[in-house]
Image (cartoon, rainbow, N blue to C red; front, side, top):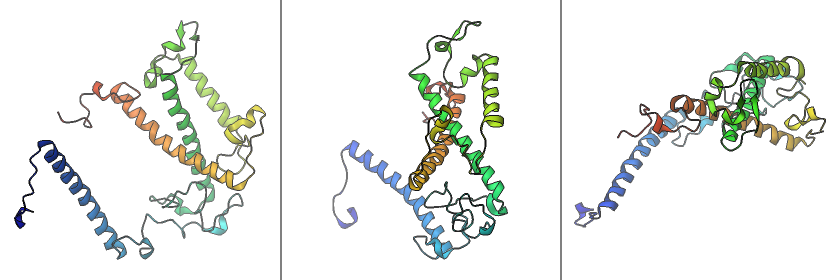
Length: 260
């Protein structure tokens, strides 16, 4: 405004500092935004990115990839694999690496089942990081080693304390579930145990309402995906800092710390 003869200086040091920081932050955001606009405009012919004008976009749902007629009756969608539980708006079936292009129903089901299992394990794992911070079982984990539950540290450090026999029991129990107890019912992740696996306790926990069932299945896979990202972050922080919650004060060499 000084070009127009209007006095517009900011004399207050704190206000001036705040405005300068806001300017550079907004400028950085604008640089990213305009590149995104150029990219969308160049690909779609629309500054706002009308992907309907760009059929070859790898970000669009794969409506024409898998063969519709080869799909089983367990959940036949409208177009190939699109429309199944696990599709997330706005991308729908997001498969940028093209794993589903082989149109193999069995391969798709196997990958979805593996995804569900990893998600379920990760949800337990994230809870397993949080709960011991507030509660640990009383008594002994191993009487022969005089090891109490309270003596077991949280996070990755627990691996150096828990007896090998205890770790072996974990693997034996998981092997029993995988190889003997859980029997597939044709639908990925469905072992006939009902909601939360309560059928294993003799409790009827099936969800008969199609809409409620669909909502719960979509919530499970979404939460599982989030948990997989979360547990990797916890492992990363725990490994770098020695703390399950990532105390960066314990890791001076971290490139993520402020450059003091």
